[in-house]
Image (cartoon, rainbow over all chains, first blue to last red; front, side):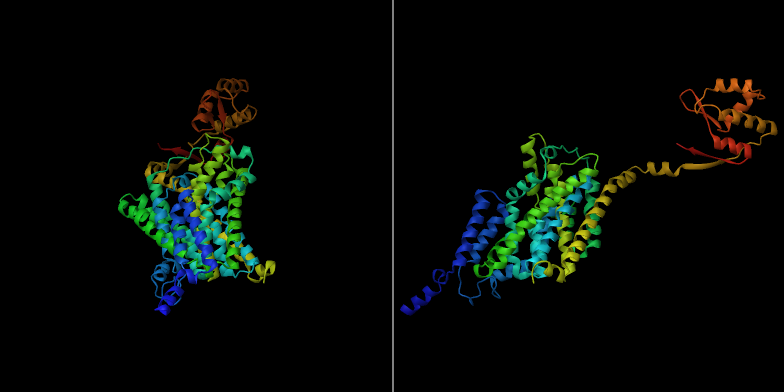
Length: 375
Length: 149
């Protein structure tokens, strides 16, 4: 009886616990706190945070419980991450929620979404310089796209062993957009520039909105075919929304499907951050590079907007360049907040949505390009 | 391998340049396409604009045969017109024509107007067209564009 009791005790979490599991449990609790108390991306941080708790319960290896063990329930759910199934489903939901009107009204703002993607490629170089392999560097660089599903999708294809740290870094920085972006935006712009008022966008017809996803998909995917899974689903979701006759499908895409995919993705990504796998030197490097990537992407967007003003007759507020990173709609909200601090009657949110949604398209193209260049 | 050596060894700069170029080309071509989209749709919704374009006919007008006297008068008028300001009054032209002794100035001026060599500027004055006068003198056909509304 003593032996049985001793065996049981040796299999408990208290006995098997490692300091790394405890650290990750604390990080998970912090994610849950930030999501609930601070309202930082709660739909992502709460599932990821709880997933971290699940993944870091010390378990006896061989029971078939861990996410990395063959045949476990979690490993089946994680299959959707490693095979890149959830990100396109999330993209379909995003497409079904996104209104591209402001982009259609002023297509030139799309360039800001392209400029912000420079952060991806600059970070790619930084990661190479730090000794990461090209496949790993590509996956790290994509964090600068500020698009969690894209980062997970590309990492699943190129460096599956880094999904945990990259997904956590990408979603953490997305949640920290209101903290990371404002200082960079203020540093790179003058008060006079921040006060610029944007002209009212023209009215966009329903027909334009319906045709746009088809044209966008064909044009971008003929140029970068590897972007098909993400862009295809994004444009398809948007077509469902704009077509009106498919309202039921659009509703399912933007509610049931995106919610299910987000829950499964969040919980499994969180569970994949087991202390012994996650807390490595490369994870620290990924977090540092991720922050750099985000900052560079923001700076590129703002600087490009300033450069555009040299040539444009009707000036644009360079703050909206920061919305070129595709954290929809957080970075657009940040632009609105920073602009409103200078002039409470200046409403930039609507204008910032244009580079913001073009950033989503841009990061999907960038992921496709990196995938095709690496494979 | 670290630093610049790692970037060079992995062809990093080329990959980054190609990557950013493709992203830019994709979004630039998309922005160009959608900037024309509403214009195309406007044409599609208002096909009359198309019809107006194609209804612009080019008509070839044949000059009526002119006599040698008329040709001489037109030549004299052209010499006179050369010295006139770009916008002139018709009575002044007639007055000068009479002073220079041009034969039947009224009828010859009427001929120039009917052939489009002298035409109103819609501000009460008249202008003249060098080319048309030259064509009259050479006896060539004059091409005239007419818009059918």
